Every structure is written in C-alpha cells, then in structure tokens.
Amino acid sequence: MSLRIAHSGQGKVRASVKALIWYLTSYHDLPTPVVDIGARQSPNQLQAADLRQFFRGKEYIGCDTEMGLGVDRIENVEHLTFPAHFAGTVLCLDTLEHVRDPVRAAGELLRVTRGD
Image (cartoon, rainbow, N blue to C red; front, side, top):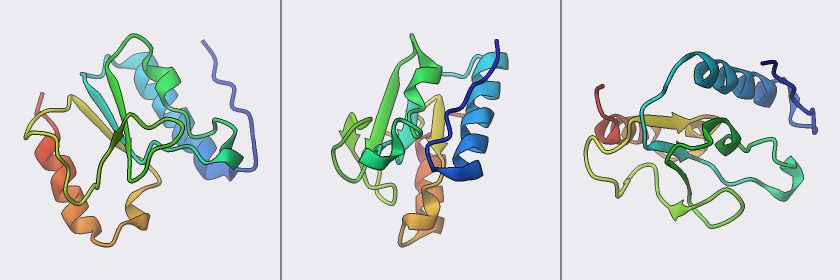
C-alpha cells in the first residue's frame, strides 16, 4: 500500500500529519474507540483534514468546538465530557496551539485515554 496525498494548499505540515496517521494505521492495530479532537474540516481544506478514512471499520468519533464536516460530537478539549479511560486512541493534531490552556487540554486527553 502506498500513500498519496493531494496537496490542496495545506502545506507540508498537513501532509506529514496524514503520513504519520497512514503509517500508524498501516502497521499498528490502534485500539478503539478512536477520538479525534479538532476533526472539523474547513471548506477550503478539500478533505485534507479527513483522518476518518484511515480508520475504516473502527469506531471513530470526530470532535470539535462546533458542528461541521467531520464532526460527530461537540467537545471542548479543556473540559471533555467522555468518561475517564474511555478512548483507546486519541488524536489531537494541529489543535493544541488553538486552545486557551493547552496544559489543561493535555491533562484531559490523558484522562480520557485508556492505558492499553
């Protein structure tokens, strides 16, 4: 399997993020559910931010602060409503730089992630 990334003006950072997710999902069976924080795709992204495609057949919950393409659930990363140890895999890519308190957000990510 090879990775093809359409460059839609998102630059090398988005391409490298998608390459990382492709690698992880190709060579590792990541535990579920997969919770993706910051999953909303902007209209100009042309699905560049769509990570759901790498988790076909797995429970995947796209979260963001507002509804939109790619979002299943509204969440505030600084105050997640998931119970402790809920998620098998948590993705938070290109997101922490946008939150008011990234240390609190990181603590919440750790709280909701299982240790397996």
